[in-house]
Amino acid sequence: MNSQTQGALSSDQKIENVFHAFGYSVPVGKDGRRMWPTKFKREMARQMNSGKLTIGDVRKSCQVSDKTVYKWRQEFGKGDNKKSPSNKSTEQAFSEIKVMDDPTKSLTATDQITLKRGGVELQCPFNYPVHQLAQLIRSIDGKP
Image (cartoon, rainbow, N blue to C red; front, side, top):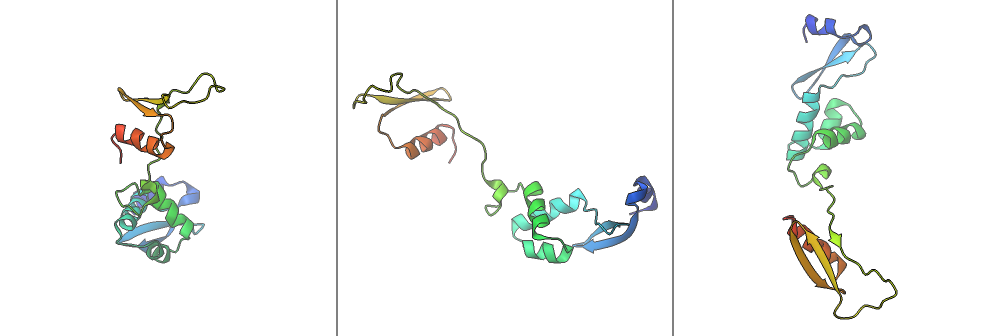
């Protein structure tokens, strides 16, 4: 970090020291707090998601808590690694399902559930298992 960059920091954030971790120089403020660059946090998340580093490796080398490391991985670890919790799909799927207007009417074997999704209309028997309906909706959307 050069003196020009140091001068750009506010007086309460001037660099007192530098902390070295994984080939990066991390500025340490007068209050002793390290100012982790976004590029560093993103690289640590990438390394953890690829399996090159463990959470313990990062925690020990950077002298931070598990919570901090998990936060970095969650915030910046949007990679393709299956182990990453951020890789879970949070997208909600909605589908139109027609239900009977009269709840007192009893169901007969001819009653059907009609699914309309993405220009597709699918009719299933009224007693079709709910978990399989969800699978049908994901299949129509082209998701596994």
